[in-house]
Length: 600
Image 1 (cartoon, rainbow, N blue to C red):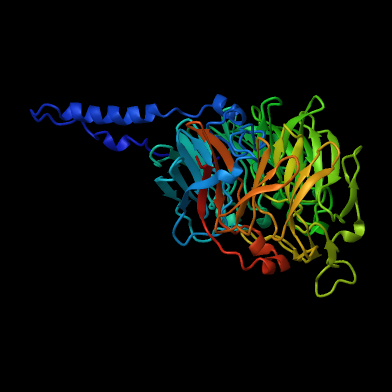
Image 2 (cartoon, rainbow, N blue to C red):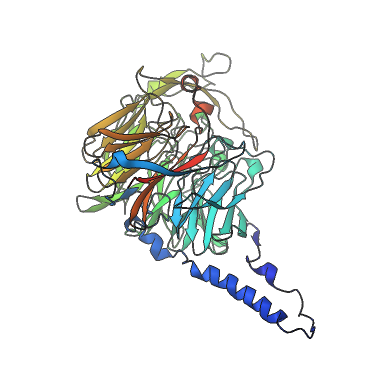
């Protein structure tokens, strides 16, 4: 169990450390009591965020209380104030810079509540802004130690709201809860040891009054897990590892081993099995399950861990009340390409069933029964997939193309300690990566930010060392087409048909918003764009000054509809992108929030 630090309440500094001395002057105690009452009233005046409010987030247009604009992750709003007919009048009303020299990738989704916007930024910062004017109300900047090891830029994807708190995670693997009004730290908890490679970049999830979080660090041999805490105090309620062989805990007691030790991992490889839950999760009240994607098994060299390596590269469905895994679906057993399985699982209704969809990094789009995990449909959503020919809908397993698995470096014929190199598609950055897709119940379509690229990849010998990269592979990402890498695609989950697409020269790395009859998304070239949700016709765009690698949101205030997005180029592409990174090295960094509404 991790030690819990409880910090004082925001008004604690007003309290005397001893009984006030009688001075004969009237009014000293009354003045103190008056100050306390005023401060208490200020806190009471702001409505706290409740579990019921979060459960209704997708249907309440006056706020944005969760990552995904609803715990199901559909990122859809029924608002119709902004349409294709009037969008030419959509203009910026304010922009706020994160300031300083701390730019890099900005992947945060803002939250809106009680007239405030809460938005995180690179290097573990969080800001509270006036949502109408952009005026900065307060800022918290986490003090990061030397030696943090984020694999894919110093990003943060957002926060969670509960009661009077705003809660976010940090690059040194901590959770910090701050008072929404003052920005004062209320509690702080250590998730794990950053010197072992653990970090945290996802937006936490609130479900049934619990704060659910994962971990980052899959390239360092960490062990992925999901934790549930009391959001008011940070106290750990339960923890569920997502690698076979590791013990779960609930209320400080053993809660059963995950899977069966050595059932799908040889020897002691499960002890450094990876499967980081680095993108966070979604929750569906109709099933009572939280859905977390799990990352790549460690190391990348699949020949040292023969077997399926459960529950890596999977969707795991966890009962939030018990901390037990109810079902799992593994998209890439014995992952040898770093395809992960961490992408978001979005729940929705289809043919009278509650189902969920995932556009996996491996290039296949999956539809599963949300209650049981049964595979209902699977099809490629990018143009080139060669590691597998298809997904068997009966068994749920991929039909591998064995010749496109990187070779064993210990096999005869290896050169210089390297295994046979192969060209695999998609590249390991995926047909879709961290950028969240959107679903419209109006059109029945998913709007998926996709990328077309491949990679040359080979395996190398590897030994685990705490805090060191645990890959055992080399690679070079390469584009597949001259005219585009990215493409926003409208996809029918029943048929796999692409209703329309909008190509983009650079890879797409920001998320999507479905609102009314429109779809919004951003590009690395700096544009926030909008298209007709049915036809894909681009009807509006605005240059934000830096690459957009974050998802937009929308809400209403005072009868007016707003759209906001964070701008700031960075993330994994310029760090890991190989030949693709060279193609986009002209793009400039930044760090700002843009907010738009219709010009009257």
